[in-house]
Length: 90
Image (cartoon, rainbow, N blue to C red; front, side):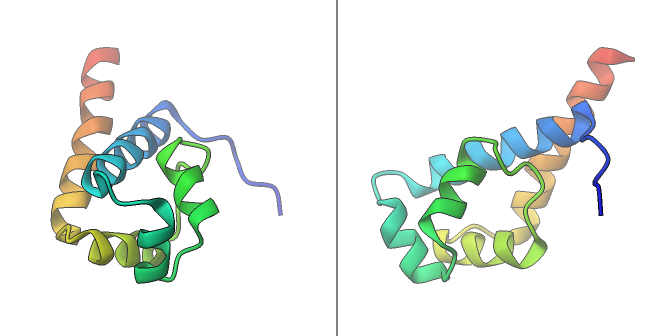
């Protein structure tokens, strides 16, 4: 199955998610967060760098829990990134 290309909105959300997770991780290592969340460190690295712009819901939920981020805050902040991009384009 071929996936359609991601929109600018989806890329913006993915970049914001990566930044949010990286900031929340702080000085903790990727390996530490991977061990706590059950998400492979390589997957976390790809999300943080934007290579995975639309990770699975349960991956995001596991990372948010491991980082102490309320899932509602993650959704709100990532949605705002896309809305800001749309406003600039509109």
